[in-house]
Image (cartoon, rainbow over all chains, first blue to last red; front, side, top):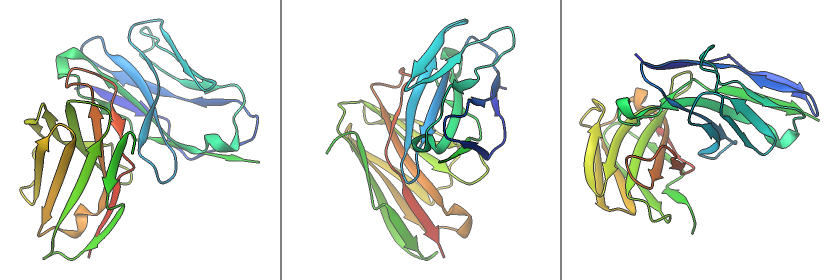
Length: 113
Length: 113
C-alpha cells in the first residue's frame, strides 16, 4: 500500500545551519507530495507542495523537489532559525486513494541560538 | 475568528464521562475531518464529512460519534472512553473532498483517566 517514510528525529541544529529532512514514498499511482509543519501547541500547516515529477515546492525559505526516480521529496533550508523549531510531516495524496493524505511519522526539529 | 478553531483546547475526562469536542471553520469550506494524533504513530484519519454528509469512517469505535450540523461546524461526541484514547484530536477542513490542501485547527489535548 501507499506509505511515507521520514528520517527519525529529533534533529538538533544551531541557528544558520543547513537543514535536510529526508522523505521517501511508496505509491501505486502518481501522487502529489506535501510538507506540513506543526509548531508547538498548534495544528498542522501546509508548508509546501509539489504535484508532479521535477516540480519544486518552496515557502519561507524551505524547498523540496519531487524526485520520481528516487521516490523522494526531501525538505531543505539553507539557514535555519530558532523560529523553525517544530515538527515536520511529509505526506502524499493521489486521486486513486480518494485523495486521502498518507502521513509520515513526523520529524522533530530543534534549532538552538 | 479566522481559520479553524477548536474547543476545548484541553480536556480531562473519566472513562464513564460524556463530553463533546467542537470544531468551527471560518474559511467557507465544505469538507471537514477529524484526526487522531498519538505519539510515535502516523496521523490517523477518523471521519470525513463532505457537504455535511459523512463520506468516510475509518473503523472508528462507536464510543466516538461525529456530528456535522452544517458545513462550518463539526463535533466529536465522546462516551465511555479508554485510556488509550488519550491523544491530540485535530480538526481540519478543505474546500471540498477533492482538494488536497487541508487547514488544521490547534487540536484538543484529551486525557482519559
